[in-house]
Amino acid sequence: MTGLRLFYFVLFGQSFAVLGSSLTNFGVSVQVLLDYADSDIQTTLYTMTLLASTLPAVLMGPFVGSLVDRWPRKLTLICAQLGAAICTLVIALMYWTDNFSIAGLLWVLPFSSLFALGLQVGFAASVVLIVPKEKLSRASGSLGMMMGLIQISGPLLAGILMDQIGLEMIFVINLITFAIGLATLFVITIPNPERESKGKITFVALLGDLKEAYEYMKGKPGLLGSLFLFALILFNVSSAQALFAPLVLSLGTATDLGLVRMFAGVGMVIGGLAMVIWKGPKRKMPVILSVTVFASVALMVMPVTQKIWLICAGAFMIMSIIPLASTSSQVLWQHKIDPAFHGRVFSLRGTMLKAMQPIAFLVTGVLADAFFKPGMAEGQSLANIFGSVWGVGEPRGIALMMSALGVFSFVLVMIAFFIPAIRRVDINLPDVNVKKQTVIEKPIAANPDSL
Image 1 (cartoon, rainbow, N blue to C red):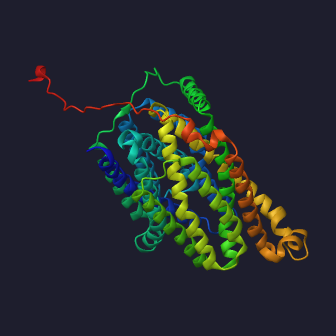
Image 2: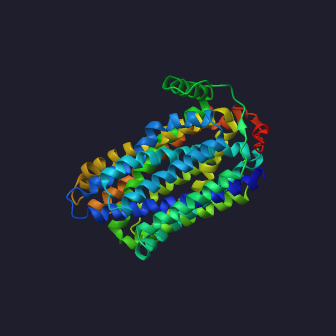
Image 3: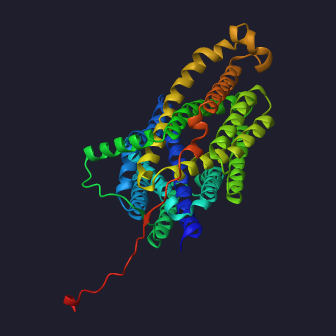
């Protein structure tokens, strides 16, 4: 089994594992909120679990990528999936033995997030070794579509299962899905990229790997420049993400918020399906920039409306074209980066992007509460200037801030359009040649001396 057939087989197994993990994550978060409902610091305790699930991956991501480049790809995926399963089993045992607590979760969740990151980076680094170059867009589109389906079905299914069978059985389901994911990994063969021997794994050696990866990226200025640019854009997107739920809830109910998120998920699935059918654009960067321009304009305009159905339409339109940009970006990096550097470069890239999220969440809350919301109150300065378009009242301060984020993103993309190294990166940088070592798995021969 090779090519797209192998990719789809692995994706099938991993999708079960990701869906199972999404069920557990939802169930655990609900259980935390229920167990500490009477606590004065319920929200703080909950956000501590979120931090434990995200911060380790941000801090240790580059080192995980270095290990991915050093180890055989198949072994890496198996170890990461097995580690994630063990973490789930530990949390399940805590729950089954009535020892479920925040303190216990704060010990386990960081390891769980690191194993999940290893699986993500290892799989992303293996795709270019499995799938022919001309079919990478289709593979990336399939991955995006599958994640969109899980985004739609995971929370809804988890909510139903929590009501019907409870968290204890959700753990059982998740462990079964891990078994399916592991089974698919054990029966396949994944080639490894050609690479020089790296020697022993030490902290100094890992730091050297990171320096080598960054120097490698510096040798591709268009890619590195676009990475810095899109990190700033992701800061805006993360800020808008933090404001989205308060914006919708200021206009409607929790049901309306669920409806908007459903439309966003459907748009993501349709966009991913389109990328599966279409091979993708020949010129990647102009498409990435054009899609970002459209999304920036939509982010400017969408908050102006106070009608839920228009917000649903805007969320659907944005998320239906995002896979075009994300898939094109992923394929562009796969074409320009030597597979021997994929683990380090992709994890370093992911770390730089993910680091924007906690910063954005912190800045957004302070800026919204201290400036935009009070400024849009009746009679205040922002309301006098923008009230005729965005409306008056503190909740409309959130809408104005979202539109401002859209303007900032638009300006950043326009800057990128006028930087030739970024705009022409897919032309100026040559594609790398994928050289891989074929892994031949031989059966273990009987030892003649033992007969």
